[in-house]
Image 1: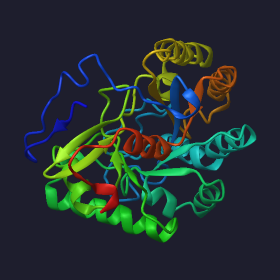
Image 2: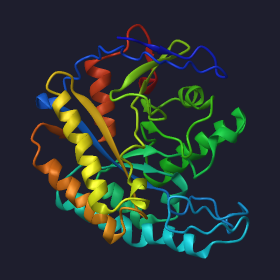
Image 3: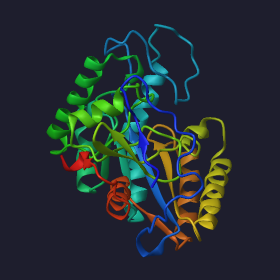
Length: 312
């Protein structure tokens, strides 16, 4: 193992070596060559908006291209609403029809504001990873404010879901303090605030071992704002095929990030069904919830000589 360390809150280490070309053999269940995780970001209702007092409308990762400054963008608001009113349900039905696991990166406020989606997530037994309390830029928060956001998220999930999710992933990316504060709060087995590897790895926060399960922006459905469904499907399946070929000797993992308001649109949804059809024809793929991947790694490749945060 090649442990990653973070000696101080304000000086996170940049590790350019990682596993240095010699990663551990993942030993995924049933000899799978690739662990594949589909992530659906449920954010609608948690994004910055004028009604919520933010002074502007969030319209990134939508079809609205207006540059309104502090003016309210009703088109973008409607596109977010489409995600929760129609897009979520289209994606949910497809994963249920195919009996595929799905990880939900859920903003806590989005679940508070949509009990129907919260109930569907619970009834489907989807894996939930905390996407924070709301869509907020953690990089701009001081430690006390960020600590409060983590607390608010956990307390909200405990009300809506009945439990604290085992994973954490910031909207907009983390601050230099986020990982330390997540470990400090306790109860999280892993975070996904990293894009730097094809496999999970351990970090050391003080004397606590903390697992990182990297995410990916590369095959994220945000690319569908500039690609056709067919182009995106080819792009994603090419990545799957490369990792499957590598997996004969060195199995990897892959994350495919989805958004209700993006791939939930019919013309883009066609690209997702192409990807799912391709996956269905690949018997060496373990389609897995993110938590199952984290738990497998903690068992098969445990950190040496440290207390696990998720067990605290």
